Every structure is written in structure tokens, then in C-alpha cells.
Image (tube, rainbow, N blue to C red; front, side):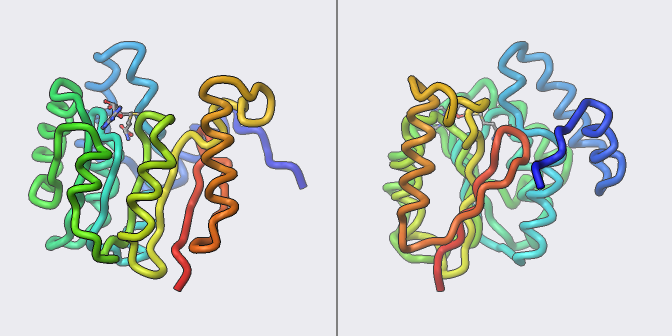
Length: 215
Ligand SMILES: C[S@@+](CC[C@H](N)C(=O)[O-])C[C@H]1O[C@@H](n2cnc3c(N)ncnc32)[C@H](O)[C@@H]1O
């Protein structure tokens, strides 16, 4: 069976019939529209709700995010972590992440989130090599996805999950294998050929891959 096309109305229906978005989340979504065109980089609400749900279901305690932007996905992951859980989130922008810091405080999850500013690859390489990470999310510069993935896989605990956003790259992974479409296709092929993991691509948003490290 082919997937159902998600119209605007069906999208609203999904949101209305899922766990509701809370006030700090709503406020952050609204403030992010203030950054203009780039606000489209924020994950959608169904994706964020799924991240909280998954974090809770996996009982994840230790998470890493590559690509903070204004902090919505970090907020959603942190909401699902226990009080002593930890999310390390990486970005290069002081300006965009400052919105996140304020939202995390408003939501009461700021104690669980550590923001590191600087190139994410350097941050990941500076982390201990121990396989202790339960959940990771890759959502930054597409040309570095394979490099981020290669730093993360050894650090994931067996059974740990890496989420990867934009794996359809607006359909260009099949239609137009130039530029970012080709980059994303190379990433998808890299994961599919990796015997250390099992992966499934979900048609949520612009395509979301869930990668589980084999036990
Ligand atoms: C798609 S946005 C992340 C959206 C965010 N996950 C959310 O849902 O709101 C990508 C982010 O990656 C960051 N970025 C780009 N290149 C980077 C790099 N080399 N290291 C760290 N962050 C980077 C950008 O500053 C931007 O905030």
C-alpha cells in the first residue's frame, strides 16, 4: 500500500490527536518564526512529539544532538529524559541558540541540556569513546552527515538509536542526484550498507531515518 499524502488538514488532524504541544513549546515555535525564512529548519510538531515519546519509551538518559538551531528538537528530547538525564546539543550559532536557552529555562529542562558552540565534528571528536549514548539526533550541515554518523556509531550503546533528519531532501535523493540530493543519497547508502546497525526510513517530515546499533 502506498503512503497517504499528508494534506494541511490531515497534518492538523495528526497534531490535534497526538500529545498536545505545551506552552513553552508553542512560545518557542512562535518566537522562531521571528528569524524569518530560516524558521523552516525547525522540526515539525509531529516529529517533536515523536522524539519526546521515543525518548521516554527507550528510557534514554544520555543523548546527543547535532544541530540545535533555536532549540525545539532539544526541548522535545529533554522533555522525555529523566530528571538526571543529559542532552549534549551542538551548534555554531550563538544568536539562534540563545532563543533555545530561554525556552529550555521556561520549560524547566535547562538543567538537562548542555549546549556546545563550535563545529559539531570537533565537539563529537572530543567526547570519550565509550559506548554510552542512548539516543542521538543528526540535523545539521548535510555534507558532514557521514562524518557525524561515524563519530556517533561507536559511542552508541548496543540498542541505542540515531535519528537522522531530511533523508529525502525534498525528494531529490531519487529525482535529482545533484548537490544536496546526491549528498543525502550517499549518506542513505552508507547507512544501508553498514553491518553494525539496522535502519528504517520513516516518511515523517522530510524523511527521518532511525538507526539502531546492533546488540
Ligand atoms: C536544520 S537546523 C537544526 C534544527 C533543529 N534541530 C530544530 O529542530 O530546531 C541546522 C543547524 O545546524 C547548525 N550547523 C550547521 N553547520 C554546523 C556545524 N558545522 N557544526 C554545528 N552546527 C552546525 C546550524 O547553525 C543550524 O542551527
